[in-house]
Amino acid sequence: MNVTVFEALKWASSFLSEHNRDENAGEIYLRHLLGLSRSSLLAEQRSPVPPEKWEEFQEGIRNHAEGVPIQHIIGFEEFYGRSFKVNEHVLIPRPETEELIYYGLEKMKRLFSRGSSLCAADIGTGSGAIGATLKLESTDWPLDVMAVDISEEALAVAKENSQRLGAEITFYQGDLLKPLVNKGLKLDIMLSNPPYIPLGDRETMSEVVVDHEPQLALFGGEDGYDLYRRFMDELPAVMNDTFLIGFEVGAGQGETVADLLRGTFPEGETEIVFDINGKDRMVFCWRK
Image (cartoon, rainbow, N blue to C red):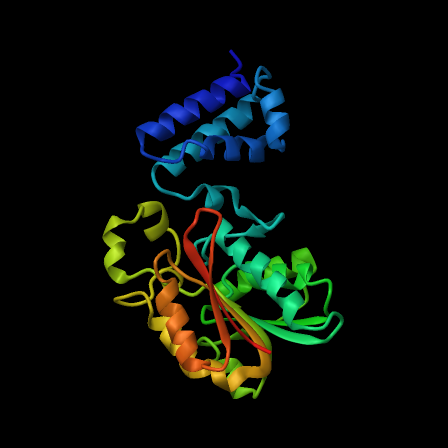
């Protein structure tokens, strides 16, 4: 007997719920396997799932129940309307980071004249989501984008994503801003989603994250601020007179990161921006 789309989703929802996993993963995975949009999948509720797809679907859902991120099973994650390859070497892009880019672009419009040539960097690029999206969305300026990561494996993923999406980016392997400092490069814009989770939070985190995403991209030392502090040592050497800096931060970290930026650039303006869920997720600093 053929299993319908409705029955497949119902089974996945129940199975994932029993294993304390996100029940929506079933819909995401089935859409991927059948090549359907959400509305098309809902319209096909009574249609049978091909037997080979049903087998693959069950295997993937069981793997997810055991802790493998659904994005790793699929191999991609959607970000700003584009698909980015992800694997165990890169952080899976989150919706909060889409907001970092959105607000960054809004602030760029106010800071920089339309059509002016700008240099931007994505530090700790991972999958390349920030750098590639910034390049492809910044249609008002000729934007030269650089992306840095300490991990060779992460850079390989970022390069593959940027090439597939047609985003021209210069990549550097190295620690934070050091490759740019060493080359004497200057930036107008710097965006980053650095590791910011305090080490003590590891015990309460889902194994889906801790066991399958790179530790380098997750944890920011005992209090979560190690990378931000190091940024403050290096940023003055690379930012131009007029600049925009944007960080993603953990919920509750906004004021501390803002204070670090105020101390580093007392003549600049600093703003904490709250995300769609009302959490302090972004900190921007600029000077005009």
